Image 1: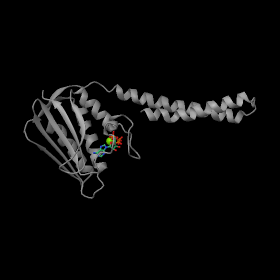
Image 2: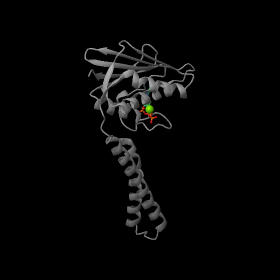
Image 3: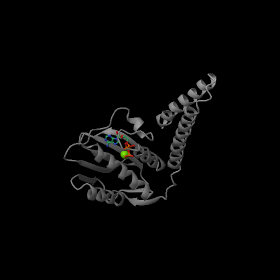
Image 4: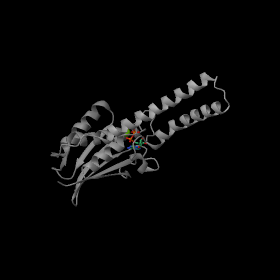
Length: 210
Ligand SMILES: Nc1ncnc2c1ncn2[C@@H]1O[C@H](COP(=O)(O)OP(=O)(O)OP(=O)(O)O)[C@@H](O)[C@H]1O
Ligand SMILES: [Mg+2]
């Protein structure tokens, strides 16, 4: 978000300096320039205002309704809807234990898998697109790996969790930050790793066993 705010600050500062310059030189007849400068200031301040209110909406995400839900009841519908949109991509889902259930908010956790599968799909440039989800119990946690055969994560991975950090032309950069917020609200952790299995990215989610 920092650079999104910094961007409009430059034209604001430049406009103010231009006004100052003309006032100092007593060229108060330059009405046209003054109104262009004040217009730029108002427009850019509106920009920042929009960003900040969008951000606080996002920070005020409604608190979850927690229930015990079987993981496959969350993941399978998301996979099916991805399959119907991307007919040629391969989506796999495996678990070691039949009944992995999580104490979670259904809508929120569904959103995590949707965002992650969307990211995976978008990162794969190859013709054969493979996205695989694997869930297991480990110690007192449920571990869920979402991996793909895409390009893998770019450098500075931790930055990718920050809102508005995107490498896509049409991206908002909110996907991963929303995932992180939801997983942390569930008492879990999310990390960005490399997929040994498929060669692309691996996102690991660890949630406490109920
Ligand atoms: N599976 C992945 N493989 C490679 N890079 C990824 C993957 N997932 C995320 N990224 C990188 O992390 C960045 C941030 O992801 P995030 O979901 O937060 O935003 P976005 O996907 O760019 O935008 P939006 O979610 O609004 O479409 C992406 O732009 C991309 O560079
Ligand atoms: Mg995304």
